[in-house]
Length: 288
Image (cartoon, rainbow, N blue to C red; front, top):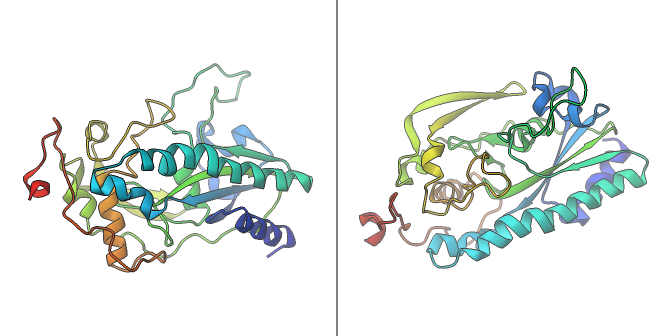
């Protein structure tokens, strides 16, 4: 590992980054210009993906169905816009102190349509959105699960990401070879709306890594009353499901199967999960 990469990772650990992955820009070959890092910073040599965990306790109030603001703050808004953002800009500043340009990027949904016109021929219109989950796979941090969420070997689906684009050539993180998602389909089985298909699947290929993903009816996810919420950045983005019953079931299942290294003394799910249908009625399963 070169000295810059070693020192950077040490500083990232000091700044409480839970995950650091580095992808050389060549791993983005084939990504269209409206999602490509070089459309933002043409001299990009390395794409750094920074992750902070969603602590398991942050999901507790949603799991019990009694306190949702904890997750909304420490698992979503404050985690992204304060804690993770401070870590990201600190790492970008560290690189620029060493004369390497560093472009910090928050996790903006790639589904957001252009909001302007191209400033000259051959350029995509603003604003270019880099797919952060896609970048995390390219940076070796994990894989796309059956539910379509990003899983890491450390925390499963419990993390948020931001990016730094830099012209520094840094040592790349190998692609994740571990199989994290076991296709137990607990995400689909516990969804009271049937938004995740049990049998219809597709294949997502990122940097040569092939992953099987279930068909998701995101129009139903947007109506979910089981912990999902609208995308916090833009209404066109996919709904945020990291607190939803599908992902909470994934957390429980991965821990039970020993698939994540961040283990606990007690199981995540201690009682039957509460469930509500499209109009808010409590299901027989959760009522029992």
